[in-house]
Length: 169
Image (cartoon, rainbow, N blue to C red; front, side, top):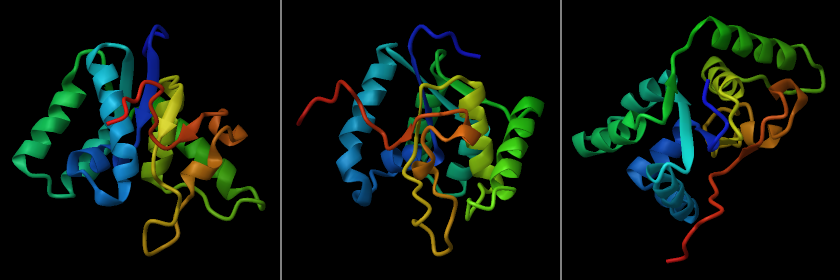
């Protein structure tokens, strides 16, 4: 697990995808993402993600330059890409079970989302950055953004990417 000397931010796959592909529908957040990456390069924050991110990104047909950007970001020695191991799998299972068993919850996280959230919790992330509101697919998904500070998610702060140091362009 990471030491708590710098801010630890977990990036969901969709944040990496927005940055790498410069997605037009996320342009309001690209400045924050770029600033977070500058802060990361300066050693002021640690980016954390799961190996699941690599799998999800590879299936989006990244070109060679985009793969290089991803490898550079994830390859910094102070960033952490967690494997899906026993503790992560158990935590993901617990999260799915709690939501599935709660009659007040309409949806429960699919396995990739549960693994991302579990990894962030076990990495002691200060924030989990995502764009996943549950509406961005043809079929309704688990609305991660609406679950910030949820008891089943160990009160994890979940939000869209934001930087306290964003420089206005």
